[in-house]
Length: 212
Image (cartoon, rainbow, N blue to C red; front, side, top):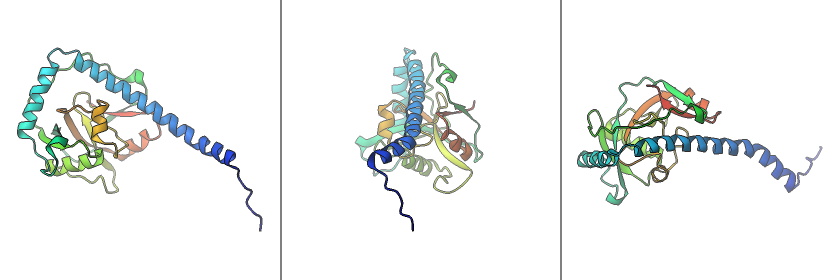
């Protein structure tokens, strides 16, 4: 019986780096694209002189009507307005792989009207996955994310249709707020998307937007 040749530490490290380098490069490129998208909407928000006042009014109205688990400490609560999916069909999306394909937003107007939304609160300590589960429970949305199927629920910003962390469900809300991917008081959209879309962006440096 032939014995397997021994692999020294240096050779093993080189092999590991060979496999890890493309994955690391993908994460860096994807993170850069995400930052460019976030900067784009942040500039649009800041370009409106009335935006801060409108945001405060909007957040105040959400807090007045918000639903959520009473077990969440008040200090951990963050508030959003949620638009529910109209049906169970997967929605059309746009996949953006290049910063040059990001649609520039010059200005935005924030509508403080909560019509057709569910005001609610979640915990900033939660993961995105747990947040979506809680939103579905509070808003009575069918949620099969933990089952094998053709569609998955994802969270989108209403302002620009941007999908919040489509791949990483264990990212904490606190981190998304710190990076300004989410802003407290945002109007968010919960929608079903085709699972093939998620599989596609795992292979590319891409982000997802709802198709208008």
